[in-house]
Image (cartoon, rainbow, N blue to C red; front, top):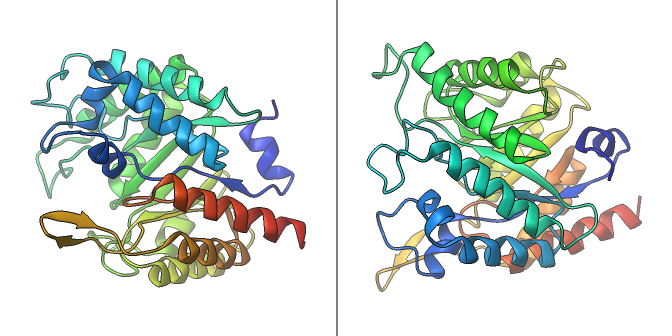
Length: 297
């Protein structure tokens, strides 16, 4: 199988997966339970979801390890099993990916859940240690790339990058969450991210989660203006959530996500998937849109 880096270099457009947490909730994940606990307690349900994304056309399946660091799992049922969770999650994703030729596994690394000093309690050394433990376990588990996602602060990403580079040479994607329109909660802009990381340090930069599809398209435009030609990652929510009879509802339809995918590719996105609220049906629509755009190139 060609490597992730080789496939990017060839100009291929890849399809990522959809949401983990919101889809696991549909499968019965109770409120307050960490999705990462289910890696050990309900591995069959994790595998079922990941196989559904592969069947829908995902070229990249992310591991169920978004919060699988020692800091974020504090208080979880399996807080002491960080290494086992990451390795097992990598194995589950690898099993799902094996059902489709060419499918790859991305090791998901989310924020630590606490701010770094001076805004919060964590020191850089504590952050680096937590990220090093996770990145090493994911690499040993056999992932093809690492996806540092839903980030909001440059300092924390610097810490995770230092940790990753110390333990593995896997390709890295950095994806920020612009939950304040076109800025992160810490005021970071797409141009800030491009200026710091679109220099050969990582394979891709991009955005996930956030607010609306239109805002994410604006962010991709900002990335493209700041770093022309640099490969972009795009994984938006299926819209903003709202409560309906006690249930969380995401209103963006698969057809709308397909249109987003076409526009994102035009703006330089080389990997497109979905975040919160995105189902296998959304991914299937994205995959079809991307195939159509590639056939017309």
